[in-house]
Amino acid sequence: MTALTTLGQFIIEKQADFPYAKGELSRLLRDIGIAAKIVNREVNKAGLMDILGDAGSINIQGESQKKLDVFANEQFISALKSGGECCVVVSEENDEYLYIDSEISKDAKYIVAMDPLDGSSNIDVNVSVGTIFSIFRRKSKAGEATMEDALQKGIDQVAAGYIIYGSSTMLVYTTGKGVNGFTLDPSIGEFCLSHPNMTIPEDGYIYSINEGYYTHFPDGVKKYIKYCQVEDVATQRPYTSRYTGSMVADLHRNMIKGGIFIYPITAQAPNGKLRLVYECNPMAFIIEQAGGFASNGYQRILTLDVTELHQRSAIFIGSANMVKQAEEMMKCFS
Ligand code: AFP
Image (cartoon, rainbow, N blue to C red):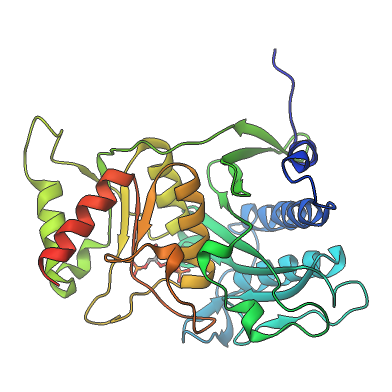
């Protein structure tokens, strides 16, 4: 029997990878892990409790918030506040960034951007949802953190991860030295290392896109979808189509099995739907660390300029060869 490694043990062991680190990032990741367990408990109870339905408020994207979104947002913020290693939180649920003005946090080194409960429209129907997080070092030296601290390019992330609340709950993260996945063992209440050194196959046979919007897609995307559907024995086409409406679930599956996830610009969403800071950038960092690639169709996601907290972007992400091929087809029509 192999020895069990908990997330806490793993984080401490990996601190040696950063000889000058003083343990702040480790503590920050541990705080996120604790909040994830609390959110997991509530997500699991969602079908039982009178917790479904709109909380009544509308977030900056004009979307109605579910109560569990609000709950998850509060839990992560509260864990980050009490941990003291994060001075700014950018969240999908908050219009502005939140500067943590407490004695222990105000000079903390790290910024956290997050989507506390992504895919939340799936909660009502018991389909997987997820949390996505991204961690940066602050640029300003001390005192109140600035907008510049919050608006950093994806390439400057020091860590990123996601939690998938699925048939089992997993936390997957990277600190720029590969990707590791931990499955929550409910009997001991610990995330345990279950997927060490995760890698995404270079080629895949799954494509994930909301084909209902086909007529509104750019021609390059239409061409790529047709390519996926054409029969060809040599390349094992037609590919399989899988799309849950929960990015974390779709990307997690594609990371393990190989595949591409696309959310392009559409006629209705001319800049794309997904958010660069707390959806595209963290997922791009994780997938690249696993050996895959992420693009907006023309440019690597991690190098895109960030000008707004809730900026949107198109995304093509997954197995490197699939994303490169989709990019080639986009170029044909640009
Ligand atoms: P919600 O959090 O509003 O459910 O959005 C989920 C999401 O951001 C992402 O997880 C999905 O892949 C994508 O939007 C689904 O969008 P469509 O319903 O337009 O396909």
